[in-house]
Length: 336
Image 1 (cartoon, rainbow, N blue to C red):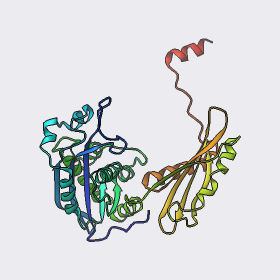
Image 2 (image 1 turned 90 degrees about the vertical axis):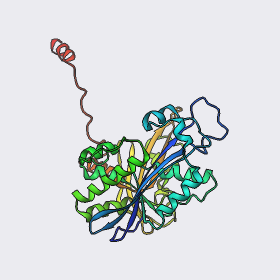
Image 3 (image 1 turned 180 degrees about the vertical axis):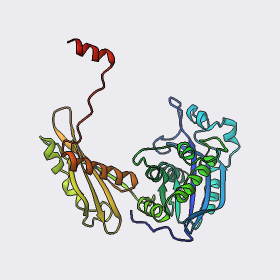
Image 4 (image 1 turned 30 degrees about the horizontal axis):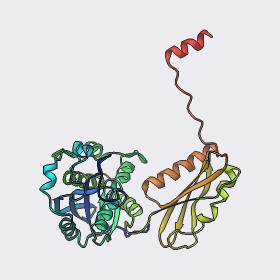
């Protein structure tokens, strides 16, 4: 989606959360789909951007006492090193949410590693009867880092990024407080090692409004051939899924293998990534499964790399590499 560019004085909050999950096979009183995870820790660092640098302004840390999933899931216990006793020392979520909102008040951008935290935060706010609006744009720093470390499109962990920039490891990972601190330091280093204008451009083109839908999926009718399957959803690509305005084509639709890609643009909401895949049902019929979402760095890289492959090799795509032969297989081939 279109978002405001960072300028001197822009304030942002880098945050991370840990949440507990229902234990498989254990009966719970609520619908798990309504509360897939209950937040047990929030950590955050507040920054101000000025003259190409991020300046730290404050930190936030809060442990939360769960009331739904009171017993730690074994996986959560393993990665966070928390215990059931630790959970009992936390404060109620309502109080934690109020304190975090006060800490983040007036900030322009919320930053995290991965895109799951805002969804879980909104989910918990709604479950506990609180206002679930985030109230600021959200930036997933993970694909931004991948671009600037020269490995676009690859998902890297916070620890990988910490090692990449030789950041001193002071605390264990998978603590919300520690991971927020590490994520903030990685963001600092991204600015320190690259041209600020390039970083700001990447940030502006990748931040999204978490209070608005950002991804839209739909399927077309059953048809006889894969080719006609694409035609069944083509009309949906003409209009913005949010405002129904006519979309322009930044990268026109092109088919490669069994998928069609495009990069479209809405004058109000910005760039939209589109991918359609032709799929076949058990009975032999085909249908198209489409997804449209407001583009982020991973999407720009994906559609650009696919277009480059298409321009070079056509709709069949690059030839698949030949399977490697073991020495035994090579020996057998030679004997024949």
